[in-house]
Length: 176
Length: 173
Image (cartoon, rainbow over all chains, first blue to last red; front, side, top):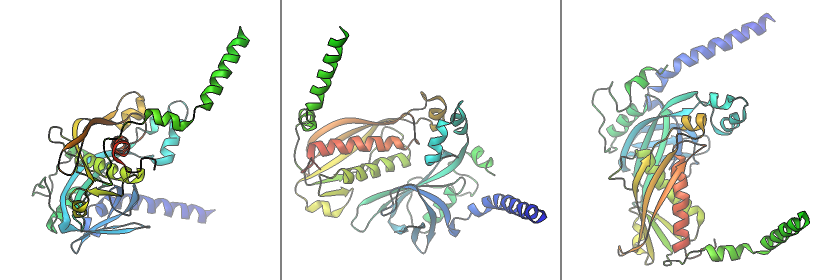
């Protein structure tokens, strides 16, 4: 009984620690940013979770099922944006709409802010591709800077000061 | 009186069941403008309307995916693809965004009636020489379920169907 309580306490403590540690990890784009590939990457299904890393002149997307590499010099445009998404998504999210007394509608009020990263690049035949990723709020601008530093082009230049961005500052301050 | 109604209803149902689906399609199918073995999709333009980059890219990518999914064309080329130059019977799709209203997924979920996202796109099909062969305004919308980007998929399905019905070499596929 005592052992079980101790184990529960340790698991709870570990959970709290990991939750507080997440934002600092998310600020480092070179370590592999956790992203969701919405659409565009050849050979990768829509809404695939994975990690995105700009290194050695390539933009590397790796997931459990696929790994795709795009030469950064072929990226013609990188843009960032922000959006929000439901906390309860997918099939489970749709099923929550069946909860009686408006429970599903209430649950849909819980939303998390995300950054979007959109790239346009050319393949070896000259064909234009586009890809959209969502990533934790506050990480897209740093990621874009890293890509531009490695040779990517952008139609909307990023401001030089690290603190400013084209996303709303209020939204970023509220992030845990 | 009731019996007469029942018999009439059954008669109508039997008649409706005997109409072949192919006949319905034959009546609804529009006359094809021209045959093309390949189609090239150009990046969606939005000079007049301020369209977020993710919507622009999603429109383009979904359109290509739907054209490949529908079949009927031997090749679906992207903008700038050098292989398209060697195709004689190529049709080129130019799309320009004419209207955009970004709704809210949360508003859709909570109220059901509000928060619709809608995109109006003018589609122009040209032959290889640049002569316009077909023009049509299409729209994409999301009313109930899904994120705002789902409107781009709705447009892509309509655009791919339009191309398939008018230019595909094998429209049955």
